Length: 79
Image (cartoon, rainbow, N blue to C red; front, side):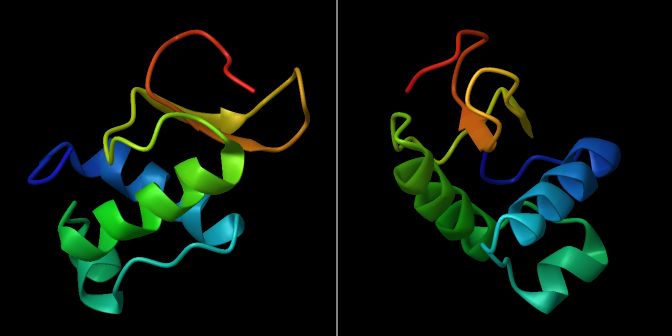
């Protein structure tokens, strides 16, 4: 969520977003920050993945159910 400071997780989220075509700002990506542009990219990714658009993310992964990037807000796959 906005302001998250877990560098490993935020870095991983940035890579997952970018690989899916959703881009946080260069500054946030370089500094491993979860700021407004990361949240915006996540909202767009959630909309594209048809999961609830919350701007928060419990996990981001390549979904084994639908074989696309998912940015789920819970541990349960939502299509």
